[in-house]
Structures are given as structure tokens and as C-alpha cells.
Image (cartoon, rainbow, N blue to C red; front, side):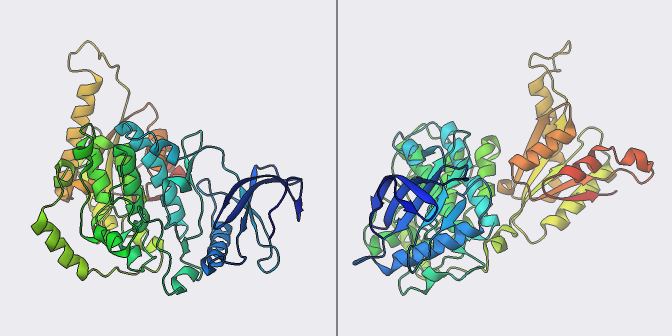
Length: 460
């Protein structure tokens, strides 16, 4: 297609101006009667000298955007016939590219966590829809004024329910060199944890102002990330807290099984830094020595990624399970029933278990009793939550405790479940002796009716 001019019509779309031109094609700002959305038109370059991957990327983005729904991907509005007039018209997202923040890096830990959690939530949303983005980088992420992140440019993506055209190439595009995961380098495009690795690169970049693996231009330089660990962020920026380094380096583990199991779990830890379990990763101050690197090199030679049928296959293995615990009014029989239910729900899975209780707000300065203050109340309930969870013997990185202050426990529990992408909520059932009319108004029944996830009622 020729270069479009302002005022020209392409089907029902009117061109306003060209806003980008590159090797993949051109992007125009357009409008259409009856469409109450800001729009852009992407016109791919299929002419003389254009690589075949341009056609494949166009078809891929058309397929993926047509299947995606929700606030974390632009809406597909119109398309042209690929053989005569190929184009995509999509929603133009208001906001700023994440690369604008990268250019200001290093950023404070709180800002890194806020931006990282927004990207992680966007990734989890598309993973739930069976899509791996596979080209996650700051220039492919728009941050709305509300703070929510939107993923753009799905030309290298993979949808589990559609043919993966890129994998059929003899040398499939792996993604952008600084952000590509080890398993992508080996040809595997099925694992959503590849996007978690790219998120780790972005977090590292935001926290330090540098890329963990540089900008390699050769295959051998790219493959170093299979065995060469990056300089710890705290060695570059002493102000990076241990919890943030723990999150970043866990995302950047060479083998997917050692990373966060899902993007939702990354978002969870970034939103709750006080609950991040600090291991050697978080305390590290230098790279691995020659012997450790050599050992990792030998392991990398035998590294074979496990191909997954769909992103949901991985997500189902690592749900976020929330347990609502009445720390004060509960009974030992009820606590045992909750624990047994959690064991059943999390059996043979790497679930993240969040133990939650709701207490009435206490003034920061407290009351007449010196121990009656908000800090002391929170501490007491955290101790009770830990005592409840101890028999489960869960690893520290898969367990967290949360005391919510609210006069409405139902609203507090539902809000927590929604914000933290909880997959399964476990709560005690009302006693069978309670009259049905009263039972329907209990906290557990009201939570079960309105929770944004699966709910299991545990009966003593």
C-alpha cells in the first residue's frame, strides 16, 4: 500500500496524520463515523525487500487482538483484506509509554513496585486468555493515567488455541534481545514464565538504570543468560532494598521452574513487600564466581524447556489461595477444618497461600490502654495467623499474612481477592444448626455469593 495522506479514506476510516514509520510498516491516526474511540491504523510493509516475518506478524496480531478482551490490550476495531489492502485499526490508548520511566531510571523502590505490579497484572490477564506476549519491553507497554498497564504490539505473540505461525519458521523470531528469555532462545514459545523473565528485565532496568544482560547482538552473547547471572541490583544501586532484589532476581532465573510461577504472584509480592521472603538472592552483593558460573554452564548445556499446551496449564499449577481466618472468634475445630481444606486445595501444586483476617479499625494513638493501639493490634493478629499456618509447613516464599482493617469484613475480603487476583478463597462455613434465614446473612455466605473467584466453605 502507498503512503497514506491526511484526508484520504481507507474503507470507512479517514486518515488524520501519520505518526510513525518503520521497517514493519506505518501507523496513522484515523477516525470513523459512529466509532466513539480514538483510533490508530497499522499498515504493514509487504512490498519489495520486506521480510516474510512481516506477513506472519500481521496475521498473528490480527488473530491475537481479535481474541483478547479486557482493559489490558487495545480493542481491534477493523481490518483490511490481506491480499488487497492489509491494515489493522485498533483503539489508541491514552497514556505514556513505560520507556518514559525507564529513561528516568533508577527510580525509587516504591515506584518500581507500582509500575511492575501494573505490568504483572496486565500479563496475568492475557495469560488467563491463553496468550503469551513474548515481546514484553518498555516500548510495548502503555501506562494509562489511572496507573493500569496496557500491552501493545502482539506481532510475536502466541495464542494457545490458534496455529503458531512464527514457530513454523526455520528460525522463529525470539523477541527483543535484552528481554528475551532463555527458553525462547531455544525455540520454546509456550511458557507464560517467558513474560515473567522479561518483566524481571524491566524491573531491573527501572531499579538500576541498566540492562541485566546488556544489548547482545550475537547468538553466543544472547545465550550467556542461560548460565551467567546479572550483577545484583544492590551492587549497582545501594538504595535497592533486599525485597526488591529478591523479586527481580527470582524473575530472572534461567530455568522457568525457579522463577515466579505466574505473573500474578509477582504482582502479589510487589504489592506486599513486607511479605517477601528474603533468600540468598535478596542479600547477594556480587555475581557468581568462575566455578559457580562453570557449573551453571554445564547445566545449561542440558537445559530442555518443557513445552506447555497452554498458559492456563501453568497458571492452574500455581494459584493464589486466600484463607479467611477469624483469628479471635474462631474455634480449634474450625481452624482444623480450614487447614484440611487448604491442604486439599493446594495438594501437588505450587500455590501461594495468603492468610487474611479482618479487624475493626483502631486509632493510631490507641485508647486508654497502652497496648490498645493499631500497631499492637496488627502484631497480635499476625502472631495468631502464623500460629494457624504453622502446621501447614509451607515454604516461606509461598506463605503470607495479612491483617485488614475494616468495619465491613465482607467488602474487605472481596476487595482483597479482586485486587490480588485470588484464584481460590477458603472460608469457614456457618454452623448447620443456624437457621437458614440467618445463615444467608453471614460473612461467609455473602463472600461466597460475591467473590470474584472460586470459593470453598470449610465445615468443622
